[in-house]
Structure formats: structure tokens, C-alpha cells
Image (cartoon, rainbow, N blue to C red):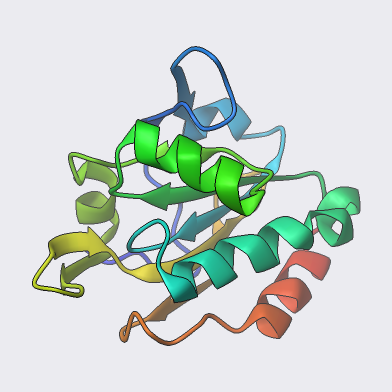
Length: 161
């Protein structure tokens, strides 16, 4: 199943260690009725396009502040790698580890072969979810070397109620 605009986001929970001293579990249902959510899927920490994607969105957080928006990055990297990635690149939002590929499989966002024959990473995608849990905007780039359209994403965030 591949999710699409208009779908309700299915329930999932993932761990993060990127911005905390102790492992923390985030569940998408914790935000329903409370906050809009932006999920930033990326294939692999420390690669050029993934670094640009996360740094650009992290730098844009001030633009999103009035929209009551919670942002999370999601990759199949382990929690320790994500912690170092966030620290090194100055990423201001939590990075969630889908190391076991449960969420990317559930959402249809598995990139079969990334680079150097590394299999089953996350596709590059952004998924914007309103407070009711409905996907209001999404973009998936089939080629992991192609960046998401940041201007379209900002327009979609601005359109949130």
C-alpha cells in the first residue's frame, strides 16, 4: 500500500535518540487533534542530498512556527547514527529510526536499492499531516538524487488551518 494525499495516516511508533539523552518513542497518534505533523523521509544520513533536505527544512522551522507544526525526520539509519547526523548538521527536529523498515513498508515508501547496492532504505519524501490525521500534501521522489520541492512544501504548510 502506498499512502496518498487525502488518506488518514496509519498509526505507527518509532524511537529517537537524536535530541535526548535517553531513547524516546514517538507515536503519530500522540499528535492527533493537537498538532500538524511533517514527516521528512530520507534514505541515509550524511549523504549530500539527504543533508541538504534536512538542513533546509530545519532552517525553515521559523517559517512554520505559526502553523503549530511538529517535524520529524525518518530514515532506516540506527539511532546512534541519527544522533551524530543531527549534531553534526545542526538539525533541530527529532530523527526517528525505522531501522526495521516497518513504517516505510506500511506506507509504501521503500526504496528497493539506494546506492552502493544498499537495499530497502526510505524513499525521499515529505508527508504533511493535519491535526485530524489526514495527509494534506506529499511528495515522493523516485530518484533519491532528486530533491523535494521546498517551495511547494512551504505553500502546503501555509495552507494548513
